Image 1 (cartoon, rainbow, N blue to C red):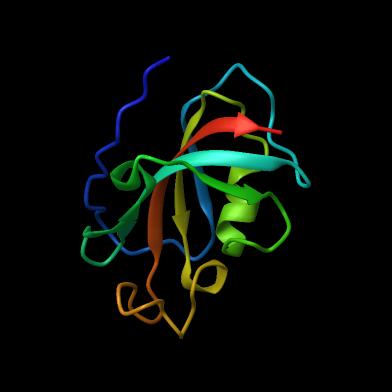
Image 2: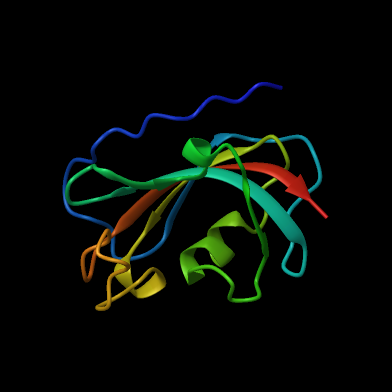
Length: 124
């Protein structure tokens, strides 16, 4: 299966108050459960501008993390759980499940809602 870096359209309307999870492609491989080490490719954009702030695709290397262990923002721990390998999921993550009032590294504004398209490529 060959995946390509997704394009994320700038959203219309106000950002959601709660995490929105949309399966764009349902995978048919192993299911990601809390406690698994998972590998994902992703693109992240700011809801307010539609501008990309990060993408594993641009580094050519998926992100690996322990699901449910707090190594990533809460919206990821919640939003990646239940995905199956080969799946692509759109996550719209409100600030309280992302970086909140702090923002992040000068690239994510305080209280920014984040949109990610995440591809699950591995579960261990």
